Image (tube, rainbow, N blue to C red):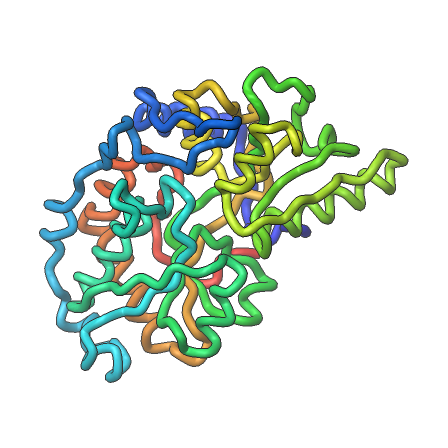
Length: 324
């Protein structure tokens, strides 16, 4: 995430509010670690598979004929939006206890957007690094996977922005390595997901460390948050870089809140998450933007974010390509 590609930075008060809001959802905690020191995958809020039930909210969304008429004919005829995601990032998007049902606030938003357009959503789970190429090859119609809308990515795809977040540092409980911010990552091992803006930020921060005469950051890039939690839980890395919603959620739920903690402070390089769409598919971009704006205006969007405790990341307007 170099050169602030996720856009606007956030104040420390915003971070405090976000932590408090998410805490309300996950206060009860859930999902301990597995045997052998392995960290469990993120679980649903409250433990025992308890997921916020917004089915009534989503089912109440009415089709907007004018917006539906904006859909490209192949999608309108099929009645399905093919959506690519990386389903392992609670509370954004992950699997329910059955291991097959996608859940999360992004999943609920996607269903609501589809309902507004008079279609349904079909998920394709894939590696984060494959999302953009899958759009470009028309394997999927949309992506929605807590992907930062950045100027660099805008060269490849278009975005409809639906949420605001920033990078957060997660460490072991008690912070044994004394990490207090980006500058204290110098000489440390850090885990992150391959192909994300977190990797770009870590690479740039490592270069700054070297320039200042300190040791470089050892960057471990994996395919999943779960792998990164295992690395941190067992001490193979000193920190994980993740987005604010996921970091706070994991720190409150993994091991009943006893495994990890979030380093206090302002989210790094705050900016928008975007729904990715092929740059040639301008009809779909405008249809999705219009549907999201309608959901913001009628209150459906706010109800979904409130249910998941992530209302602090709400946008006021459905924009396109607002990241920098």
